[in-house]
Structure formats: structure tokens, C-alpha cells
Image (cartoon, rainbow, N blue to C red; front, top):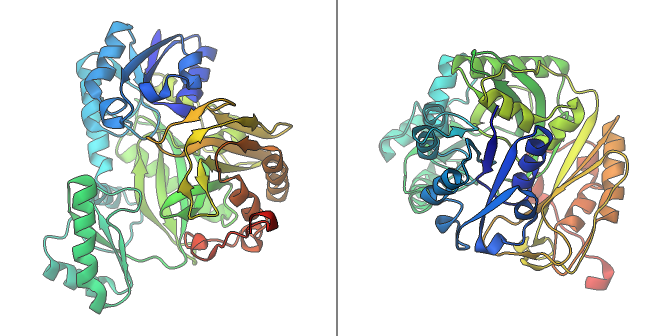
Length: 451
């Protein structure tokens, strides 16, 4: 087992990893930018190393600084969390070259599954259902036009190096194809330095449902049930739940088997997710694979009483998976609390937290790195907390979430707590009747004193 793990991340996920390491008797090293000197992950780690100024490019993405921090502290493993370098093949390879275990996918696996077009071809070969569309990257617009006609409108253009909704365009008729092709390529080039595009059939009334998987060095894998991540704004998840209110036993069995088949086909080692789009007929299609721990992993942990970070560390140390294929017996919901103003287009709201009162009680979990007096820097993702409730039924989990949100007080900045409170009473959400288009029609109702 590892003696010391450096966590190459910040905020709540860094703190989350530190907690499990402490329980396993493993020493921890936090790295931080100058903007994060007062963050809780820095305070609770056994050692902390400043790796640069506030910009991510000069700190959390600076591979040489992170490797240097690992070497001077004698860390024998690096946990990358999510985001930043967690799915960077080059960083995984550099860790290997420096004899430091990267607690994540190998460079080869990240390369194979990180490029969406390549991943789709791999999944087809594994017998996993894929969305109809182009075979790999589209070479030119004339080919794009032919593929769109063969696939049948509506279609979706996607950047092969994409993420966060950049380089994506929905096209409903041929007349709009050229403009979409030009603008999507331009946006992808600016965001990723790669304007490669591929095309898929646009799925009607889609749900975004992912399957949590774990694989070990023997080539064996299992799935730990699904998570419904369909409530999104600009392709960014806002809330997630398990089990999905759209799920049936037949669908879970089929999706679970497909996810395990995918993981075992590529001999995946570690924790990851196979992400699917599910249409209104409950037909499901492979979308992408995330070769890392997910933001929303706590809801899976809650419903099956299983520490995913612990499993990640054990598998990275060469131990066989301890999990099995699961069917959840409880219901859990996660609300991502962001430092944003939901009444003004979710505008970022960095600044100093003057007051914080955390909710508690049975079935309430709060993952956060902030506290009263903490200043949220403007340099990073705006998520500051994850509020999770767990109960016997979905109805009880919603009721518990409403109560917990009412207790959750954060002053000094704007947060998305009011949005989640309204979401929990939206008739379509309460009925479990939502798709990835849900937020297009959602309107925040301002309280009378703010009007």
C-alpha cells in the first residue's frame, strides 16, 4: 500500500481524498496555488506545498511543479481528483516515468477513451450500442452533408476534443448545416486547439444516465448502478440522483451489462463512468467514458454504503475489486452549490463568505472546503459545496433536501441554494419527468423582497 499520496487538486475533492487517506493510514500532501492558501484541504493535509500563482496554467496544470512537489515530499502516488490533470495522458505518463503511481487511468487508456471519436469506435467493437452517425472525424463539409442525410435530421455536430458543451451544434434541417459546421469548428479550435468534428443522430427527449464502474488489474469489472444527470445548464450538471426515476429493472440490467462489457473489453483499471444517452423509448447509446472519479460520486456511495475513493486507491495498489454489480435500495440526491447568482443568469459570485451554517441531521451529507471567513477566488470553477440527502424513497429524499436547503445559510456571496430550493418543488422534477432540455424552460421566481 502507498505510504504517501499527493492530491493534485483543490477544494472539496482534495479534502474528500484526504479524509479517506487518513482512514487508511496513508500520509497526504496537499498542493495549492497562492489563491488557495486558506482552503481547508491545505489545513487538513499532513503536508502542503505551494505550486504557483492563482492561474491554473501556472499551478494546478503545471505538471513540472506537481511532480517536483511529489519528489520533495517523497510521495509514492498522486491522486488527481477530477478536472485539471485527471484525464491528461501526458501527466499519467510522466508520473509513470518518475515511478510515482497515478491513481487513475493509464496514459494509453486515457488516449483511447479521451478522444470521443476513437472511444466510439472502441465501444462499437465491444458491442456497446452507439448513436448512429459518422465513423470518426469528418474530413470536410461535403462529407458532413452526406453523413447528415444518411443519418437523418435532426443531427448533432460535436468537437472530438470537446467538453462543457463547446463545439456542439444541433441542426434540424440541411439549410442550417453550413453555418453550424463553420461556427462549431471555430469554437472548438479556440477552446481546444483542435477543430476535428464528428456527427451523431440527435436523440429526442434525451436523458443523461451514467453507469459507475470499477475495474482491476486482472481485467475484471463491475458496475455500481446508475446516476441520472439530466438536469443540466449549458451541458453542466446541476443536480444528480440515484436511482434514476426513469430506470426499470430491465433497462438497468441492460445498461449495467453494457458498461461492464465496455470496461472489460478495454481492460479498464480504476474507477470510471460509462455515460449514456437514453431516449424516450428507453433505447440507450454510448456517449463517452470518464476515466476518473466523478463530481457526483457521493450519491452512489450513499445508496450502496461503499467508499469509491478507497476502492480507487486499493485498485491502484494492485488489489482486486471488492465491489459487485449493485441495485440501489435507497435513494440519494445531490445538489451542486455554486457561487453564482441564479437570479441573474447564474453569474459567478466570488468573494468572502461572512456567515455559513451547514445543514445536518439523518441522511444529510455535505462535501465542502469553505467556511465562514473564507474568500472564494475568481480563478476556478464556481462549485463550493455538494449537498447530498439519502432516504428510503425518492419522495423522502426530496423532502429531506428541501429541509436541508432551508437550513443551509451562506452569506456574503450569492449561491445556487435558492435555485435548488425551487427545483425541489417544480412539478416536473417532483414527478421525475425531466430530460436534458429541462432547464431551457425553467424560470427562477424572485422572492417578493427582491423584486
